[in-house]
Image (cartoon, rainbow over all chains, first blue to last red; front, top):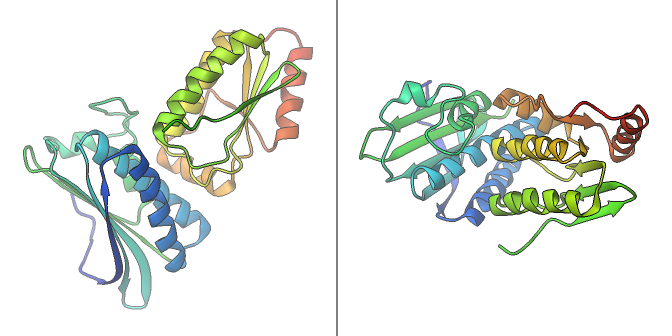
Length: 142
Length: 125
């Protein structure tokens, strides 16, 4: 499930663990800080932080904890923020189903993955049963 | 983890002003505390001020909808006030339209809404 996340130059990478409820709050703050540095508009900052919040909670709830990596990226003259969530949890057997609005294997509303995909400019989901899950979202400054 | 969102009582309205970035557990605690306070005080209305919230994700969005539903069952109307424009745009794109939740632009309008719906007699519950 890829929508064109190409190699881009990265700088100012920050990696942090997502192992507790407080880490979801901290993840939001870290993403907000870098989104401001990358000069995303307020609406785009809000969209990216919200997407990150959904994905951080997924990492915690379904992946059993993991890590988040945030970096400022550039492609040509464009600047953006890339956020990668990675866990070594059970993985997702059916990616298409997991990206369906309203489908949930747990306590949520089933909007986490599909919502994060809508809120981001680029979205990549890599997962397989027993192999953990990695989700990458990128938001570009306009 | 022991932080709790304060619930203020003004007349027969309970006011919840969320001032900090909420951890999920605080959201769950608020739901419980508020239900209890509605029963204890016999409040007819609940105003939740989210003007300080920089984001509302699906978890908090669901909490707002659940609180509104619980309050209604307990005889109180809920109005969510102060949502920032960027939050509203994000929430709708996320896929949450908060269909069952009454909203108002600010605290004053929210309390006005509650007063009006009280004066118009019992709302459908």
